[in-house]
Length: 121
Image (cartoon, rainbow, N blue to C red):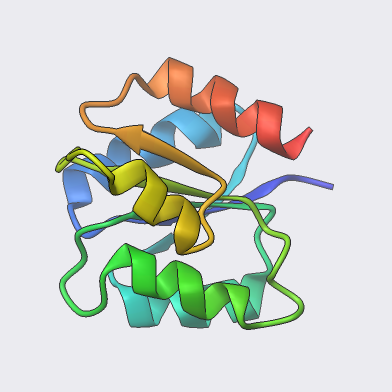
């Protein structure tokens, strides 16, 4: 069974980099460009892990993570918060929202891939 990753990112260039990185590593890549789409795709696809951009056009990633945690079938899915605005307290805020891990941009695709593999294997 292939591992499914939901990439929630509003910037197409960033989604392409992540899609290529995880696709080459054998992941089935599911994408969402906003929070509402992420909630819908998570319910439909039950991914093994979620990469959640914090700054989204409709609902912020923290709110999406909280709403995902309210769905019993999705509660245990690891969520990695990814943000370009790394301020003091943001990691704590991400964890309080239900995120498993926190990564500040710019990200190293290789390092992020390894972090994802560590969480899903």
